[in-house]
Image (cartoon, rainbow, N blue to C red; front, side, top):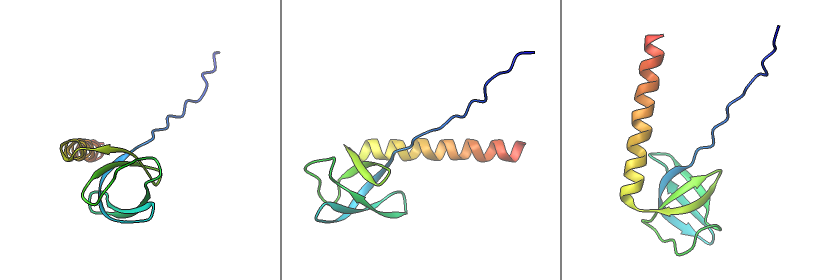
Length: 89
């Protein structure tokens, strides 16, 4: 009898958000309707209205509004597919 090791899959997720305000190195960011304080230490030249990619409380990259919109659309698509899968099971 062969024993297969248990495999655990983990996924890291970064979310786009629009900078609403900045105080020192912290921004309040709109993450699709959820407001979150985010550190800006890893990105330069940010200003209110810019979009950033946020991971574990840090902005890790600037994004264009089009990139942010496309990412939110993909999240919506994924969520709809997941909800459909749950309904079907």
